[in-house]
Image 1 (tube, one colour):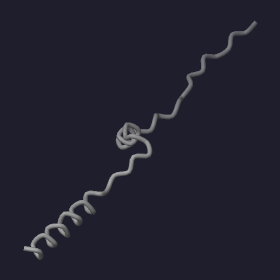
Image 2 (tube, rainbow, N blue to C red):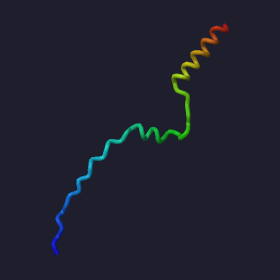
Image 3 (cartoon, helix red, strand yellow):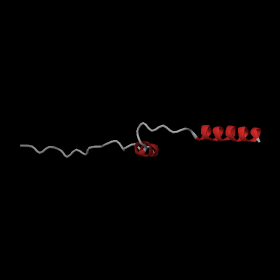
Image 4 (cartoon, one colour):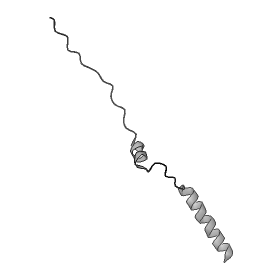
Length: 54
């Protein structure tokens, strides 16, 4: 019986992980929040209404 040659397996280097994936996974699925821009816009409109009334 002849012995088989030792072959080194060359695996491709793993791709670097996307840091945003972990944050996305930790977010509650299906939760929808208003964007910061829309919240600021609503506050601005409310303030303008308040100033018009007074």
